[in-house]
Image 1 (spheres, rainbow, N blue to C red):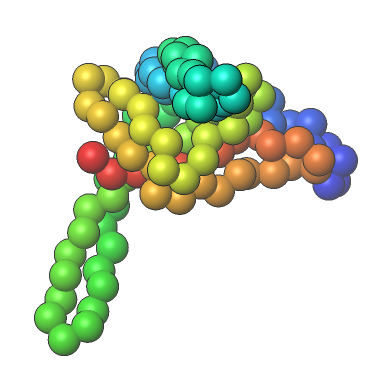
Image 2: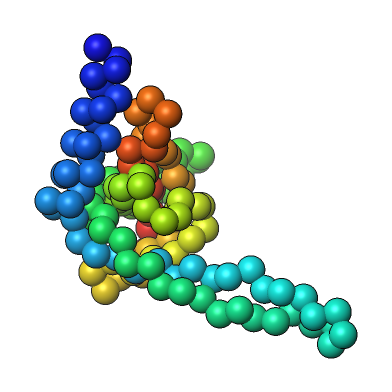
Length: 122
């Protein structure tokens, strides 16, 4: 049965994100080059990747230390077969809202990443 799940789960994850997903935009910054003659970094600019992701799903997480502090986060799912892997600290725009990635969990099926679960906040 694991072999069956390895082919079924990634296809299902991608199909659900395609069916219910909305487009988000990641601005990817290129690593700057260093010009030895001028002694400074040369900015190579950035590219914008449009990625289909799930709508944000809100949840609350309570931290207790003396007083109770309540924080709200959201979870967004992204397909695993995109041109890049999301990382903690990246920012993206989804439905006109700027989001920051706090945590990234790859959802692995077999040897492939079927999707990424990203904990985000505004």
